[in-house]
Length: 77
Image (cartoon, rainbow, N blue to C red; front, side, top):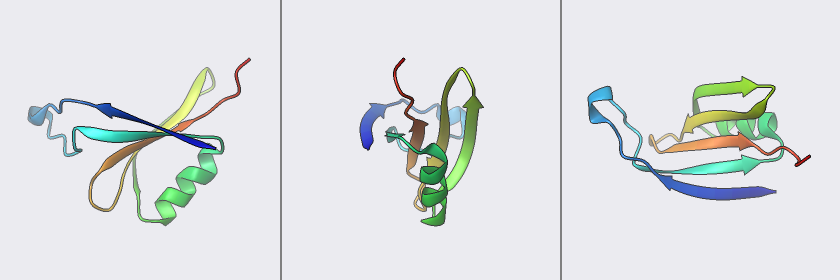
């Protein structure tokens, strides 16, 4: 299952941010497979965060530079 949330960020142009102010967060059940599929489809992985205490997350961009995040969905305890 995939759920989508949309957030609006105000870019700091002094830092050279090139993402649009709106991007999607995609919460996925199989993080590694979803990331591999996105990259195979032309996405670029910009940053990867993996920590045992928190869900994994990848900041990505599509071939046109639109940003999106893949976020690992973990079962609730």
